[in-house]
Length: 217
Image (cartoon, rainbow, N blue to C red; front, side, top):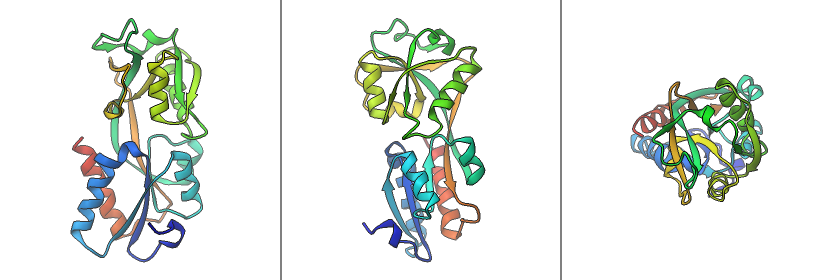
């Protein structure tokens, strides 16, 4: 692939995403846009949320697809929510609540939590705090993980519990289980993030197709 810094030409788009969104949201959308016109050039790259934001800030990409965004970045960029995914508790498979179909999040208030690292997933720690505080407790964040796979591994190893979008259940997670959370249902957003005044015709077409592929999940 070309260096993304050299790729930006009329009609081209530079899109970066996390791997969890690539197969069932981004790839179908890109395929649909390419079918509409062969003049659209779309360059796909897989990067962590922090790396996506760094490149967006430096004009090295046109669109980032993120699961969390800090308050500061929400004022800096334009965004469009393309999916709202219900959150689920992630528990070791031998946890006392692992066989339940649903739990109330406050049932985990005395448990250590594993969070995604703020250094790689900006805003994630505060998101976890906000969710738990809305249910009446402050989480004990005992460990942070630099990737979804490492988070799931930490839960499976018994280092703590976690909450993740139910969409993440498609990832390998031997040794851990996803348990639905009872009402009120808590949602995580999947956000298309871009600089103000960015959208071109190709950009708008891609945003529309991203919404369609997300709605199909």
